[in-house]
Amino acid sequence: MKLKPVNSISGVAPKDFIKDYLNKSQPVIIKDFISKESPCWSKWSYEYFKEIAGNEQIDVYGREEESQNHAASPPVGRMSFGDYLDLIRKEPTELRLFLFNLMKIRPELKRDVIFNDVTGGKVLQWLPYMFFGGEGSATRNHFDIDMSHVFISQFQGSKRIWLFPNDQSDLMYKLPYNFHSIANLKNSSTSDYPGLEFLEGYEAVIHPGETLYMPAGWWHYIQYETEGYSISVRALANSISEKLKGARNLFVTRHFDDTMRKIFKDKWFDYKINTAKKRANKAMKRYKK
Image (cartoon, rainbow, N blue to C red; front, side):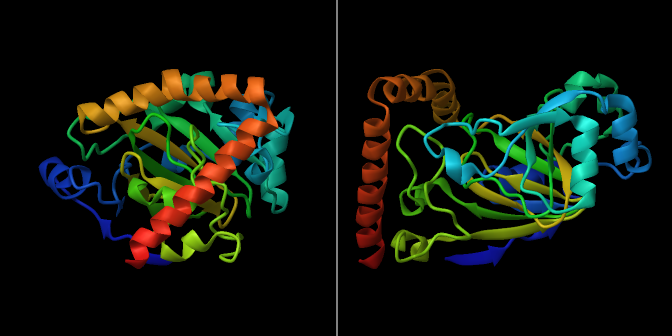
């Protein structure tokens, strides 16, 4: 696996961002996507979040390798938001919050974030999600089902993110009818998953105040180097075909997979694993040529 560093930019005009990054599906770290004048920088803290929402009961998520046969990993437990914040500050933990919409529970938080929309209005600012994780936690390698562009902004701690274009899906052992791979990019052996040796992607480490632009359909493996939290917002895919593919994933593919899993159980999962490995072998032959 070969990884190149993601470049950083600031002060880019929307027309230049669209031309050089959005239209070219080129990942980049944006230094000023969240305005320095945003109240969040002086207002937000774990103590503040505990004060306004600490009693909220939340689902927590753990190691995703244990739920490979699911399009979305099921939660592994439930606790109060305040207790979770205390936990991640106290010690490393694999527990994460997935698509926890604190801003829906406390919509006044939206007013604390001022976006410098480098897309010229394409970003869906009204649909933010917050992600929290403990030091050492990680997501499984995946791409987003809706095929949208993603802008993930770090507010506390740091994240290391590996990115790969969608045309390398077979080399990552993508499960058919799912949106994640069975290989763990960090821990899986190349003797078990030799296709990983052919991967070529990018590596980004984002810190508070930095935003990573992840192009539509790109794979990402997110690792929490420290405890922390971030916000993601989206922009719709560029082409009609990508938009249609995202709609098909949301409304057809994942429901078809659920149905087949209920009917055929382990046989369906075994079929998907075997298919993923066959596709990887074919992809390796093409790369060797």
